[in-house]
Length: 324
Image (cartoon, rainbow, N blue to C red):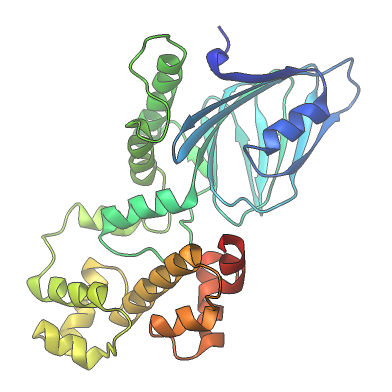
């Protein structure tokens, strides 16, 4: 049985039909056969696991060239199940095969060259869900997208274990009556997200590693974080936070650096941005960017717009427009 045969959504020799259907589940792209061909045959299967989606594509009859025409807005783990794929992301070049996978992070563009007979699984993870998972693990807000190392070495014990779990899930999904569940409330999504964050290096890996080997957060630090989370729009100077903690400003800064990975000021900014982002996404008619910015302690709206775009990749006005 072919991979995810039970979840097949398309089987076609029309390359444009394949591209259009694939773009409904992944980033828009251009897809062209490389060299001469007597005909290309393609399969497409899709499984919805809530914030995680499995998209399997197979091509036979020719090599295919792929060029993304828009930046990726989610996290995309690319696993080669057969054949090979020459993947270029920025200045990095990786050959995907049974030993090597790749992770494409948000705001990235990529090109690919898929071998004849190539079978690839995309593990698509929605950005808000993965970043929320990391926030739970770190106990703080995460500023900006997670930046994974693009190349995933499947010979490493942790990434090899994660890859085996994905393949086990594929087998279970193709087994009628098996224990694998689909839909929003299945247990696999959280498992895969946690495993990826622990297995594949990224710009927060060092902090995760440190948390596994450090003592619980000091009570003084917990008091300050509770204060910030309770009222992030308040006047939260270093002096006020230090008084609430009952320690000197220097000690408080040291606590934040050691246990949170941010300065007190950076943590306050991160929480404010997170609250503003939530309100912009939930805003009703008549709500303005200025109103939301002021609500969460941003007195200078253009400065707010700048730091917001740096974190979320778009101006706050775009988030507001897209969700009203």
